[in-house]
Length: 165
Image (cartoon, rainbow, N blue to C red):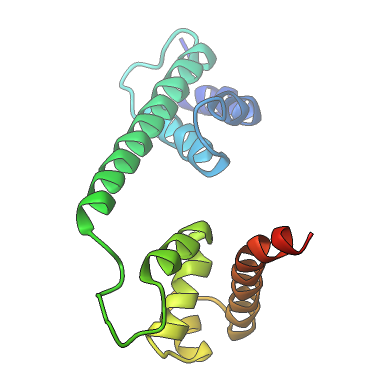
């Protein structure tokens, strides 16, 4: 029979191995969450298991798989919603922008860069406003905005470079 302190100590000694084990299914942050969730469940048991370390590995595995399944389901739902939304840009005959091309280019940016570009260009928000919304520094927003514009420019210039070669 184990007392609570022994059970917790045995589980905590295995924490690095448990996080590594969980990373087979999830990213590092979720692996940490899976370990914490398993530890909380272990400490909440009325009767500690005979082998707390083996119990922790099984609980971490189950938690990590649950996180992975949840992430998969969430991604699938987001894809269905994204497909059903329609175009990002409203048709405007007076606009000189190719809405389909702009949407394609924006989709290639990371989520944070895409959000910054949309807020800055189409939302006409300043760097300070975007920084406050995204809880980042103004300089970080400016850097990411410049990086996004560079990525967009490079993508747009690829076809031109090929034809010049």
